Amino acid sequence: MATTRRRFLGQLGAAALAAGNPIAKLRPPGAHVYDLMIAGGRVVDAARGPSAVADVAIANGVIARVAPGIPRADAAEVFDARGKLVTPGLIDMHGHVFDGVATSSIDADEVGLVKGVTTIVDAGSAGATNFLGFRKYMIEPKQTRVYAWLNISKIGLLVNNETYIDPRLIDGKAATDMILANRDRILGIKARINGRHEDLATDLTVLKTAREVSAATGVPILLHWTNEPELLALLQAGDVLTHPFNPPSPNSSNLFEDTAERVLPQILELKSRGIWTDFAHGAHLDWELAERAAKQGWYPDTISTDIHRGHVAPAGIVIDLVTTLSKFMYLGLTAEQAIERVTTNPSKILRFPERIGTLAEGSVGDVTVLEVEQGDFELIDTRRVPRVTHQMVRSVAAVKGGRLVRSAAAPGR
Image (cartoon, rainbow, N blue to C red):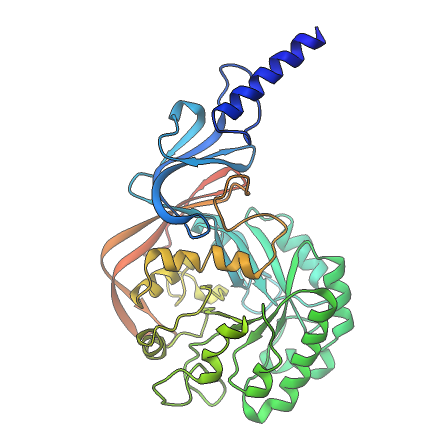
């Protein structure tokens, strides 16, 4: 009897391999091969090559097969994605989701799966003192996958900017210990600095401490924007500089020097040094700066929201990640280039425990379905200056670990 059963299972395994589906779980005759199929969309995944129309089949929570013409009868559930873009699950690598605790944070599930975002990385809302609470209440119960950049300040973003860069709160040992104890959820160290020359001494103390933590833990640094050569010199390959399009003010810098027309040379050379740049919308978009940079062919390596409670619809300036993608398509990126900056590139920067940011067979079954609507649409920057675009990206659905969630439209959209 046991021999017959083994022969039967062996025949099933051979059939699965012959069908080009070694990943899907073996099932009895007549059962579906796949749990879910996203059918007929244009698959956009820079890690796989040029976009093409194909079906994406998921079994047991992983990508089982990506190919055109997979029989729909093979799937227990089929989502018709014809005329849509099918991408790896979108990754927002700079958000603020310590809801109800840190200043202006928002619930991850409010701006996550229902908006097409399968993974959010919180950018320093929690520090070593309160990360365990963040993990228990903001990571573990959420439907959206949440990771963190740990703030170098022990208290994270509980209070205003000047307080959380207080040197008395910068504790490298506490940050190192917390990262090493929670390496499965903490992916980097956030260093918030002022970035101005007059604050250089304090900023150097903060960044040097973050550098020591990075060396001890092997995680990258996420640094608030600066043009100061002494600070930029401390960054290493794999680190990230965020907020390039800060509106001009006495309290912040951006990728230009005052009214100069060219991107600063120390910013241009970041790429050759292996240092990444992150958009992080929030209160950090000035159309004139972004347009000036785009004319020179300069775009950040990743697109993220820096989302806070006040940034969402109906009156917010950010709205969500797909609206932010629309802003970069207005600035000249193709849909493929924009999507790469919320999938492939974040997965290169952050060594996620799971294989996400790609639709490669065997990777986690995270998928986003998007549509690009044609028309006339108004987009605003931090100062609410409008621009009219003719393409708007909308989220249709998201799949996290094989579970399908249909998107919710933002109010007023």
